Image (cartoon, rainbow, N blue to C red; front, side):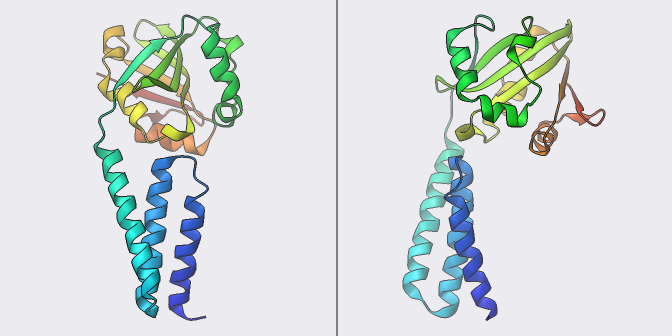
Length: 205
């Protein structure tokens, strides 16, 4: 096998992987990387149709990624009117398996005293935020879930950095647990610090 054939295989693999992504943001990024790699392969071996096609695909991916990056979304928080709201129950049922994969210990019926909020993005319920108060300055986050198509951290940036929700409520300490490596990375990206094997803490001013 020639060294440049490896580049071709890598490009093909990345393009194939991108097509399995549910998150359109990740799909575009990985597809861009794959198309650019495959275009490089086409240039090396002189396969100009391969070069032209994948260069075009790369430009299309860049165009849409730039548009997604620049798009200004409208966010707001909507209380669910308690843990028995009809839409909340349907939401938890529909995304139940996905929620259980990241938050295996979350069970709505165990938290009748918790507060439930939908995160609306352009009026679409793209996330669910559930917490209970430990004291007037501390909350225990039980669930911070974003649906698969909207896992680009914009929900989290709104919730933790842009919205005045925490400040208006007077919350200064946010405590949560993680049972998944993906969730670990998510929390660290948002400024949470590990307290022990499962517990994370974020202090806000």
